[in-house]
View: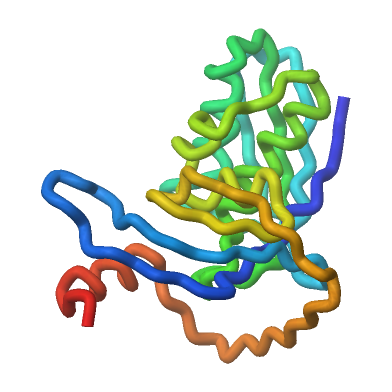
Length: 188
């Protein structure tokens, strides 16, 4: 069985980041996120195989990631669902990397959506959050207020008449680097 899921990018319409408290490894946030449906998206194709717990992720452009979020998500999905199947995944990247559009989280969420559609096994918010802070939002999509560490997702209505023009300059900023800079400079 095979299915292809459209993994849409997201935009932070607003974002407040708070300093870490003692012992916290992540920052608390308050944000409003909007799923972007348009010409920029990743195509994620999943196929269930009879190779027990074997997972393969192939990117159509040949890229390879040292710490592949999609592979980690697929392995977690199989383990969490106690599956006796394997997954072959092909990802066609269309979301630019390192620009804050949530591409790897969108791919992880698409893997969860696709697996749920193929098997009928859905995933709770706490499982999705373990895959990444944006994954719960990316799984449900739409427009939402997101808080805590990203695990609290409250859907809100959008009038549907919002248009966005995305201009990609080629500049990239890794999320971890941005938060590390925030930690060094403080909440100015």
